[in-house]
Image 1 (tube, rainbow, N blue to C red):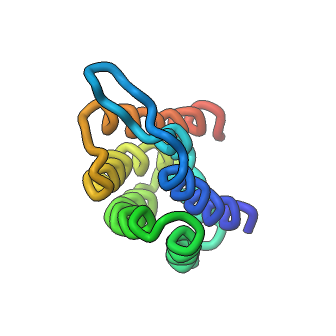
Image 2: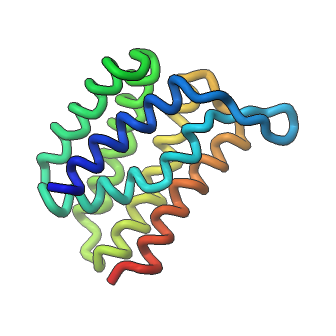
Length: 152
């Protein structure tokens, strides 16, 4: 249950960050939202919450989006919901049907879903650029790689 609460809280925290925190200037006159650096573990937390509560993960995701809609910015919450919907479906399918140890499932499912999530989210917010996409995917995968390294 702690993973489920952490998952819901992480959805809201990241969406509030995207709605309120400033952009970070990157090379080549690009800018990315600060929230990009906060999303690293959200997919990993989702996998652990999924393991703990099974398909109750989907109502939890919905609750996180609703809370984001109220607490952050409706525009960000809708972009988050669409990106989550697409990427979580991929993540859940890979996680569910990959009969590998947990640490490997986290890595494989994150690798399959994080590029989709990041691209959709950044495109919908109007923040898409290749540097931002690469950074966002790299940050998310860093969370998965850390779990892969330390999990048993």
